[in-house]
Amino acid sequence: MGKRVLSGVQPTGNLHIGNYLGAIRNWVETQGEYETFFCVVDLHALTVPHDPQLLAVHTRTTAALYLACGIDPQRSTIFVQSHIPAHAELAWLLNCITPLNWLERMIQFKEKAIKQGENVGVGLLDYPVLMAADILLYDTDRVPVGEDQKQHLELTRDIARRFNDQFGETFKIPEPLIRAEGARVMSLQDGTVKMSKSDPSDMSRINLLDDPDTIAKKIKRCKTDAIREITYDPHRPEAMNLLTLYQVLGNKTREEVEKDCSQMRGWGDFKTALTEVVISHLAPIQQKYKEVMKEQGYLEEIIRSGTAKAEAVASHTLARVKQALGLWLKAGHPASWEQFLPT
Ligand code: AMP
Ligand code: TRP
Image 1: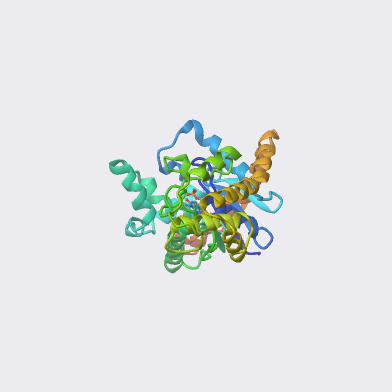
Image 2: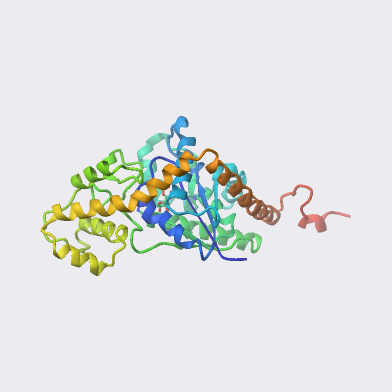
């Protein structure tokens, strides 16, 4: 069996260049080397208040953006998390072996819980267990994600090890795949907080489907600092962020960027250059997105066949887990406990 990759994005709104650089762009690159599974994690989107009118729409647009960004349905299995009940089912089984305090420690839970106050749901706390289920169901080797998911990946590994220790070797231990550049894209309004779908200000992010005028406006108004020279300097968060965007989206090396910047007279020049790079990088993605959305039934067919492929793998793993736990398996599965029946 070849090595497997699995990852997912929540359909909670517009995908932005943080999702692209931290995650999807790196998924595209794994396609030749690994057997790849990419899901739209709609069950995760239920862990924060959501609009039922929009969830299915965002699930479709997120899947369409996977294709637009270069996920190739011939080489990758694309599916929707809620279409495969094994995800929720395995999450329950893993819940029963996961210590509560492991979940209470999660940084993302603590951050999101503060925003929700008294009303914080159990789902938000349990979110990383569902994520562990997503990953472990596919005997995943590598999980390409942004930096913010590192702690959740460690938790997944801890859960898998604990299960293996208690019930015998059942799960493969997955590893994160986090790229150095673009793993943490920061807000355009504040270089110290990450770019996020949930930031109330749309000016803080560049969405993959923003039109050129919007992109130009956002970059023009984005926060910089008072230093005229534009250099990579870890003490200048806005400069670091904008230079990284310029470098990665422009397919340049750091040296090339430094050379470009040495000829600029200040932030005004830089912003013009960055705007051009962003618009031209996103143009083919936006074009492909339109084509995917226009072709009636195309997306449905890809999801349908992706679901069938993913389900075959998932149901296999789930049966193995149930067997390890000692559940009475449905007819058709070999039962490990038969030897213990009283005669
Ligand atoms: P989410 O939007 O939370 O569903 O995240 C989907 C993927 O995008 C995950 O792999 C995240 O780590 C990644 N991601 C989200 N925001 C950023 C960001 N600002 N910079 C880099 N990666 C990000
Ligand atoms: N928690 C991830 C995020 O917000 C999304 C996610 C859910 C995921 N399940 C996953 C990522 C499995 C990788 C693998 O970004």
